[in-house]
Image (cartoon, rainbow, N blue to C red; front, side):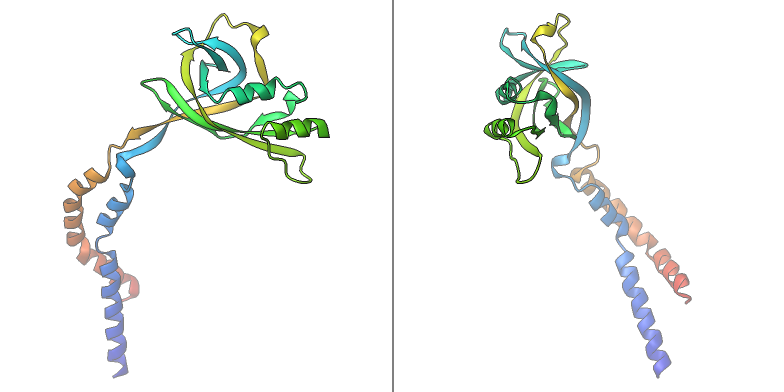
Length: 221
């Protein structure tokens, strides 16, 4: 009686395991294409920002510009707080750093971008620490470095100004890299899933006996 009970239990386990395997191709398709609105993030370009400078766009609008190695980035919003910080005589500019992994969302067709940057400042004395706090830096107790997030930066990309006046530049002692990313349409997305799903379901049905055989051989029966 006991051997038969043991055999039945093993057969039931095999059937259960095979039923779990059945549909694996279809499930894999569903998981691999599970993206909202058929879009994904894609890196557009990257650049190294070396300084800030006054500049103008094609319409003659003056503003502050992130000076990059490849392009210039006219800030239409959020640049004033950076300028005020860099021009504060009580702040040691060489102590300002931009955190890594700076990413701006870009619309390539319009050459418009937006994002944020995170700054760190290693204060030297109480005077410049108080100034840093006045600019919005958060300074934790017993910490020599303060942090600041500048949100809602936005602007437009332009060809480099070949007549850049070095006297008007506010150089960054620590240049930083910016990655520009965009949202691109997926070639394979949820709509494609529904088209391919009948095919994968048919493959699951055809391969079910093979899945059962593989499991049976692996278990020694």
